[in-house]
Length: 128
Image (cartoon, rainbow, N blue to C red; front, top):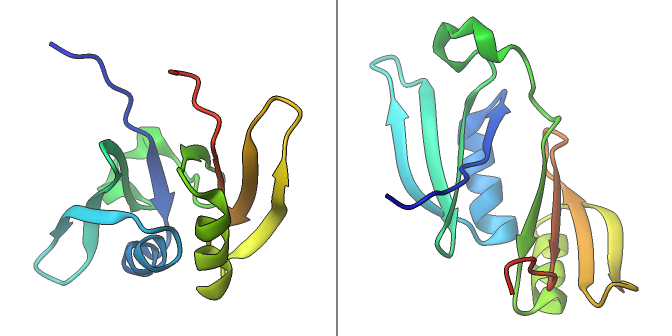
């Protein structure tokens, strides 16, 4: 069995999150579970081979998760941070840190999604 990490976020509006993550950051929808009343209960998206999962703030009544909408912070590696930064800006992402070369050798920027989660994108890859 392979070992993996699956970041999980909460959104007040998972449908809007799907749209934003596709449009601004280039994530791809893998799967979305919708209840009979049209409420999105669980979403799987990916960036390359890396998944990110999320659901509504209440996560279908599973109380142990609590309320965490807008409190996530995720780092994503990208091959072309300049182009990615421009895409995010064009889609209206709130840039929290402008694109810059870092003293540890990466080229990074950070943006907040509409619910406040911080997404950082850059060339730093701890696995290489």
